[in-house]
Length: 451
Image (cartoon, rainbow, N blue to C red):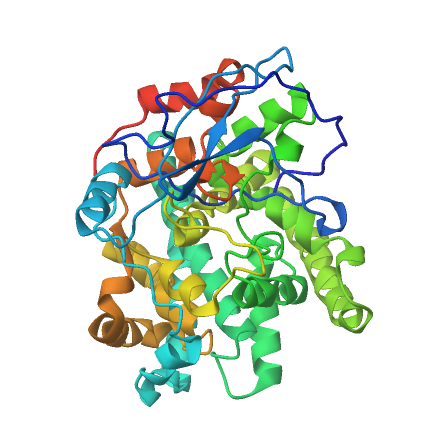
């Protein structure tokens, strides 16, 4: 979600030569690719950050990457790489170990369509059950109320636990609104619009703007430029100036778990980002959010003061983090592709990660992290996601990416999945701008590496 780019004059480099006569490095871990949220004005592509020289070795194209120095000059250091080999079982096992995954799936064949995968699902997983839908509302309301009660009674040293519970509970509201947006909550569209709008209010998310942009995320998952979720950092933006570069390093490094706040601000409040026919509904949602802020926040402050606003609203809101969403589609082996190369079935099945969390989180968040079937068809209600996933594992299990939340997985995303490259998918900041990447080096040093 970082921002736009200036135009810089291409740097002229002295010619470089291949090192060792080959661009591959035997035994090196498979490089990866993934996403960093960025948006240039008007959705313009940002160009290429790494200057590269193509070499051909044994009929395989590869690139030499030259890291950016603080002086703004590129030095002639060559970093040979190998492309990911998802058809190599031993390589995938090594990648699982390196990245914190339980399974990294094989590449889905090009001739498999998204309809093929969808048609393999049992019809009952698409069925809406009103009782189950409203039970999910009851779970979220009661768990959130319990969280507010715990915050009011907890001593200061237990407040982080109360905030974590309450923030997870309010994420459940988001998932309910999310189902409404996908028409998987009720057969009544008006009911879905009302429930979705109300469910989003505690998070001050405008329902209709989010729905319009989220529909695009599903239609263009992991498509370069067009996807509205986590995009990689683009080289042209990264090289714009030192200040922006440092901001990006922090944004996609230490503060990445909170970068959904930037996405919230950038994507949902700017009327210029919406089509004319969308504007009436967008304006109603924005008015609802502003009304909640204008009435709800003063009432909280009147009752408990500014400190109470931080304690009861802001801190739980901060627990609604980007952790879920960045894990869903971000890993070194998951590519972003241009629209010409993009394949819907591969993007939704190969490009989505199933991640297990502690059971209490799964209950409060209505199984939204059973995310693969949700990307096969967003019309599957959240309470049917597990049954759908069991079917997908039966029929397409070898193509699935699976993980249980662990520190190595998070460390991989925060320290490796940075700058877009067509062949490597991602190149880490500390390879590109080593002298400015102290935050990344710090994370590598201090973050646990437990899988």
